[in-house]
Amino acid sequence: MSLKAQDIGEDDLIQRLLGKIPIVPTSLHTGPGDDCAVAPLDEDHWQLLKTDAIVESIHFFPTDEAKRVGWKAIARVVSDFAAMGGRPQWFLVTLGIPQSYSIEKLEQLYAGMGECLQSYGGSLCGGETTSIPAGGALMISIAATGWVKKSQLTLRSTAAQDDVIFVTGHLGGSLAGRHLDVTPRLLEAEWLTSRSFPSAMMDLSDGLARDLPRLAAASNLGYQLDLSSLPLHNGCSAAQALSDGEDYELLFTVNPDRIAQLKQQWSLEFPDTPITRVGTIVRIDESMQLKGGWDHFAAER
Image (cartoon, helix red, strand yellow):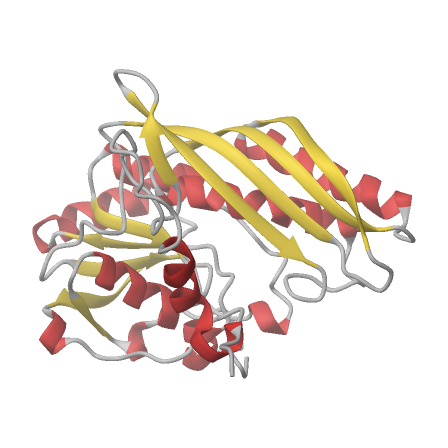
């Protein structure tokens, strides 16, 4: 009997598919496995490349306000640029549209995209539309390029043993209605990377229980998490913070010698956005094992 996507899960599926692709060109700085791909741009900058998609009834509900859905479609990509210490630039939008879909809702969708682009930078430069068979779901795919100063590029794979793990903001609650509340931490990430605070960084899109193990594994290390320290949205539990996903906060690691400096400067620069120490990077053989988080192909979600 042939394997199905739900039999192996999202991460293993991606690895199997990548195994069918030729070796990444040597001119590419960072290929699959980080928030963005990183390619040469000029003497002082790297180019960032990202694609992302949201699907009706998976990432948003048919009854959701279309303008907020459009904002989310763009903001998710902006969050990935932020996770690398970079900035967005050019955006391409592909829509898969059921033929009976409301034109008014599509116009509101684009209004939300436009508001997000105006708020965070970047310009729409093209795209594509295609029909979806009757009964299908609306699909929005975003492809974008951005840039980052070479001195500020931050990857998932560069954490060090004994680094301290931090998150910005608060976690949990997307499955209870916060799934459209996307605030990319673009300014915060630029501030952090311009001062070389993060040794490694990513954004939290699939939940801390899934994304922290990814960051640690990319660095060939493990992690210890203090569950009692998690910064929770009002009414949320630690389980929601670990597994709901779609927080779009920054997850980053810092050398312990720089923590006092980070906390002092951060509180002055971003008094309304907390950063919280939630754990430590350790050797693989000392690592705890988290379960949970969002997996598109899990048999049970």
